[in-house]
Length: 112
Image 1 (tube, rainbow, N blue to C red):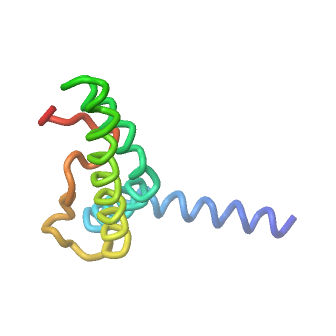
Image 2: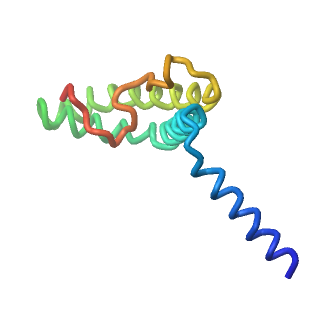
Image 3: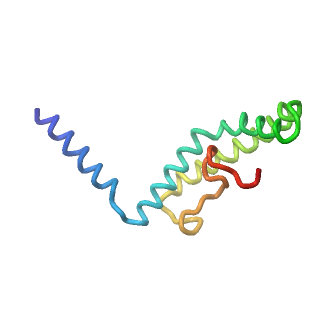
């Protein structure tokens, strides 16, 4: 019983601390989240670029150049994710701006 109450109190404290409105912590937290998400989803750039190249040009180019482009984008996004995760408490670039655009692999792109 004491363990259950202790766990509930700990979860409550973590929940309250997580809703704090400190801008620095919120930005650092979003940078950490962005980094972890980009590490986990970097590989999705491969089918995404294959599809996008197929739509923009043709399916054969999507299978060849789209795959190469996707591998490059995927490695880049994953490495940027590692960078964001390691440096999340440091406001570099200024104001925790994303290093790569779009910020997440599923975010809408303005260049396409």
